[in-house]
Length: 279
Image (cartoon, rainbow, N blue to C red; front, side, top):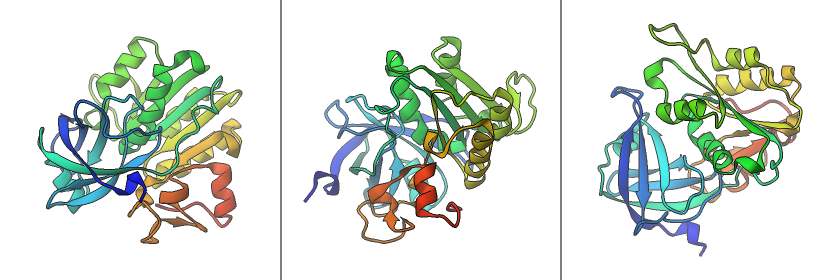
């Protein structure tokens, strides 16, 4: 039996409330086992979180590999994630993983990395931009495009502002509607991406977010001249069991939890010539 099938009992080491309480609240859980990460992972991989007596859910690992901890940003969305939201510091949980493939960050060395996220979709992308920030000499630069409905809904807000102020990345933030005191872009992420028009030369682009965000972002990247081999997305929302048994995450002839969740656009086109998945 593979290690990723065996739950690891660990504990919640820290909790950050990213957005205000409500039906779209997001909290980030940091978990450790004896002061270390429960297991190693690669950018883009996921894990199954089990809260005893409450249920389990597949969640993206929202931090770069560091050996010290794992982080998971959880949106209050359904019965299980609602229960996971109310875990407390010090509470025991179980993890299975890591599952899935990863963003090929080693293949991208020497290239500019462009991150385009919407809402909670920035969580799996954070593992990539965090990796690039930790290894700046390996990459030609980093651009982060991220947007939310309003300024209160932006997650990792202080982290993103710090990256901008310290010039560790070109950070392009946006909200859907004007707000007093907001000095950044107003409009959808795709419009901000169109405005900035990053060059496809020696670059790779990754995106995640609601289905409409992905669809529109892919269209903008195509118009900017990005080839399908330069664009990647992650479809971890389709993953259920983690090891290809429940059959609920198939994309064409492959299971997302076994051969995904990270796909290049070129690979998705080959798997789904009739069109990309709508969820």
